[in-house]
Amino acid sequence: MASEIVVPALGESVKEATVAKWLKKVGDAVAVDDALVELETDKVTLEVNAKSAGVLKEIKVQTGANVAVGAVLGTIGEGAGAAAAPKAAEAKAPAKTEQKPEPKAQQAAAKPVSNDSFLSPAVRKLVDDKKVDTANIQGTGKDGRLTKGDVLDALNKPQTAAPAAKAPAQPSGPRQNAEREERVRMTRLRQRIAERLKEAQNTAAMLTTFNEVDMSHVMALRNQYKESFEKKHGVKLGFMSFFVKAAIQALKDFPAVNAEIDGQDIVYKNYYDIGVAVSTPTGLIVPVLRDADAKGFAKIEKEIGELGGRARDGKIGLEELTGGTFTITNGGIFGSLMSTPILNPPQSGILGMHKIQERPVAVNGQVVIRPMMYIALSYDHRIVDGKEAVSFLVRVKDAIEDPQRLLLDV
Image 1 (cartoon, rainbow, N blue to C red):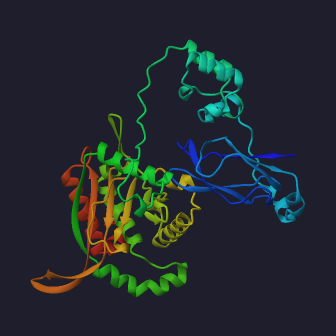
Image 2: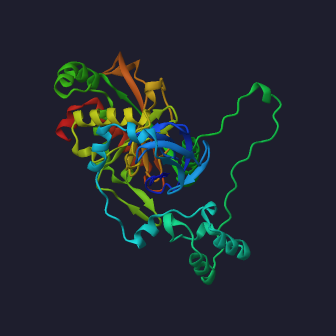
Image 3: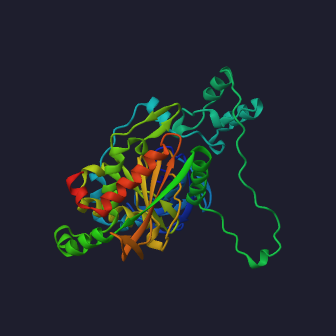
């Protein structure tokens, strides 16, 4: 019996994905849990795995097409794959957590808005005759599809004019040197990054303040304990854990930097979920360290390593990329000496680390060479005053230059 390959739930606020690549072709044998197709959302790339063994019978949606949650991508039919499916896979399948069916009302609410391609002939005729915009109608049929009753209910309700959708940017037309150029369509992730960065500039009153940090004491402490730290905890002691700890201390002293604007309210967060920016082959993403204030140096370093590795491999979960309260980004690993990081909405602050460079500085009236780092805080001036922003950065500087403060919480 054939089984359908369906677009799974994509995470909070994600309604659509793009078919990035089919990993199997029609006729290929398929075992349970085999990766079949890669989907790209505006946050992460994920794989759709086979729920049953058999042969890939049909591919209904080709690479590059956009698909909604619940859409059928293809079918798996009976064949050699079913017989060849490893027994281990068969044994593993029943062990999966069985989810209880939700009430129909909840299922309908969880489904995305139906796509016109899923309309039955009767519903399509009604939609065409009445010139109904289906984008604003919630389907209650199977897999969230629109029924005739859904359309009639929408027609009987008072209609409010929806704001005109912003047309996507179009190519500029023929180019003089087209034969010497390569045109590549932006990935969904890159499009989303562009939208969010522009949104941050358009929405927040964004300013950046700078300071510099003498890294001598942190580097000496790290050199002194790095071998014993790695031996005991199985992870290297990096600089990021020091900055995470220092930032949390500063956030506790200046809670507006850890807050966000929600309508006409300011939401102060008494928890510290710190996003750490990671560069991946498809773009910059920000995995989140949950409750980072409750974690020690070793736990922070381990989680940063694990999250960064899975982010670069495209294996990170959507839930690990949402809900951060403050972000840290390190352009220094690429050689950046100074930059102005852009806010990660709806957050009100982002800390930028930069390259450590030996420079002459005055210490007690003497010119000495010290390993120095410029640090930057971009902040939303709507809720963070300049005095708070400068004081926040000084607090980070003091903690890094005297790392014993991080241990004593002073």
